[in-house]
Length: 356
Image 1 (cartoon, rainbow, N blue to C red):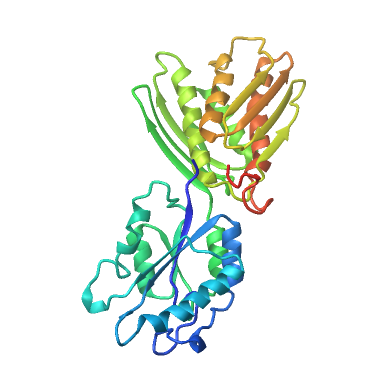
Image 2 (cartoon, rainbow, N blue to C red):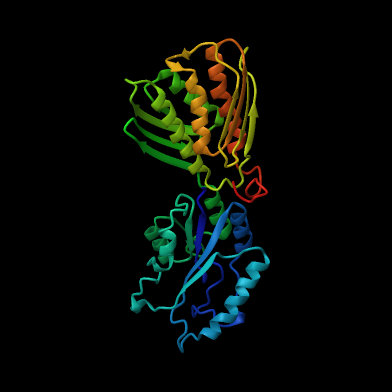
């Protein structure tokens, strides 16, 4: 299941301008930060969800009565809500600095549940605020931090920086049969470095990455003294898992891809990053092996890749040269993945279900 991209956002000085007395306790003090609404809408469209995390010193005391806070706060939420901006949750700590509350930013008391959630996408989630304490909170959460306002950037720049975060995935898979490390970056074509102990298989994996346009670093130490089965299968599982991690919630991707022939061999390939694993192969390989790779492992590789990438792969083959047929499969899948992995081609998740 895809992980959630969360933005933990400060309120005063971040969503709204902070007055000199640092209290928004009347309606006439409520002013939105410039550019905040279009920035949040762009981030929402990219699949981010919002959580408000704010220190409100002495809230509920005579110095800052709760009723003076509530009205302007409700109006802020109404304004943002009218533009389609909602918060999954709102966390407010009313303590004073001298209280040393673990909930007070940069303490993580208000966000502990998120940190314990394995569904949090730590690669893409971030903290946004106007103070050094917000950046310290980000560091304490193990997330990126972005500063807005006079001491930082404007909202347009912050949103652009967040949206430009490379889509990366890393997987380490260790079993009694193989040890594999995989790193991918969907938004960079290099480096491509592969070492599995099977030269021809290395070349085939290189074809996928090169034709799909993503960087791939893969190292596998497998039980090749037995045969290549475990190495090929586990490389496929690890690669698919790394790609799935890099895709996160799949917001904005092309989703679909298809491609065609190589030399005299015909390989019709279609890919759908649907979230559902399916592999179908129509065609046969004339020889049992090529380059130290048994051809029966070609279909097993793509079936395993489809399983962890959570996608549908269909390949239709015809031709006589086994080398060309195998290479056409790997090149074809890579080339079909290129438009499927590309982002910015659709708004939101490319599914009427709202998720992939």
